[in-house]
Length: 157
Image (cartoon, rainbow, N blue to C red; front, side, top):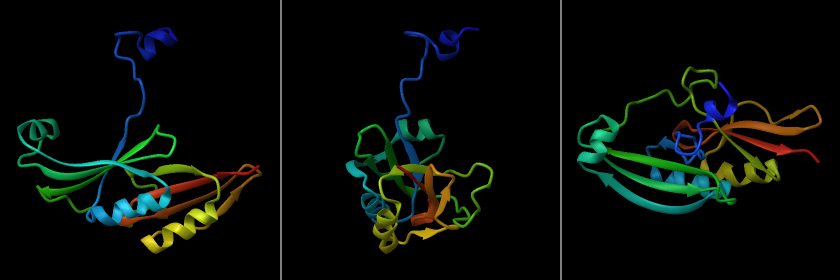
């Protein structure tokens, strides 16, 4: 199989881009404030419900509020979702990063210390330490609202 065959060609089902990552939250205003402090911009908000949504998700009686947050470069989006019905399933918000199926979103930043200072008032807590990886990056993992796992990476000059 050629690279073109594996990726798909025009009209062949090729992936165009990663559109967004959805994260279920319990406090939508707090999650929006956290991601705004990180530097994302609110692109839009909506409430979704109805038969099409139920069939799409394989759930009954879906009603959820969503907020789409966009990265400053316009290429990445985080969809924050607060379910009204059915209620969300509880997860362990303190599950370690090596948990099967766990999600982590990494953001490239210019100044990791400044970003941490902006996020701490919104409940951000470091998982471990802010570390320097060789001579290339300063990195950290942190938790935000609803246990969201975020990584920050500052490329060293």
